[in-house]
Image (cartoon, rainbow, N blue to C red; front, side):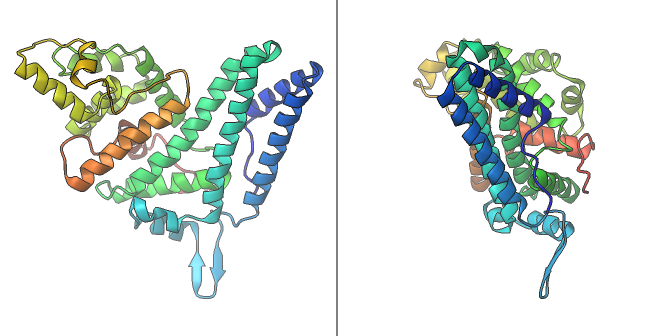
Length: 330
């Protein structure tokens, strides 16, 4: 049985430093808490590693399972039915990733309280963000696999990538995803929408110039559709498609040619579907994605206007199509 990797080198290094400083400063309770939680993670990882390899072959009677049959099975299911086709190792591995995220959140809380380790806070925030992206990436791959409007090849590649994640919980093969989505999020934090007429062309043009070449290539790709553009607008404006339409209707009814951000509260009566409450908390990236994804699912089911995929799904589908990311197992 292949063991899943518990920590990256950077994660191990920071954990070791924090434990050492807590111990040297006689913070016994905090040290024991971190040490006990770390050991629990190790035990959890060992338990998960006892399950059959995702990449392995297994035969029980007439039932024969390989990585290829797993991929075929995943690609035949809609999102709602995918759980019943998910190997036990993958289900428990997801819990492990959440437990690891909580472990680093614990240490980040200690950093805020303990002066002697407070300079570790930025490093921890980076690690927490990477773990959030790990969870988010897994969800995006599942969404892509379940999207029958995409090509079989893209969905199969997404399934192989997902299997790689399930196998070892360190995201080999998807290293290019995290920087791109991270830069997108960071640029979003600095983005100040010039709402204007709400058309959004100038906003997007200025925005993409600050991002990396892969994103610019994505915007210029022939498959960058009107739906993808609307999805990006939702992301940038932090407003749902429906809210943007409501604002446009208000502008028309009130003969407004320009729109100020201060008008949002008035028009939407103080409630926004995608509001990000704390940009400093990396977990908000995941919450922001889930809220938008839920809206895309509703639109698909009810055949409503508006984006049918999140911008993250569009970006990763593009990266799979262009083979910017590719599983070593495929």
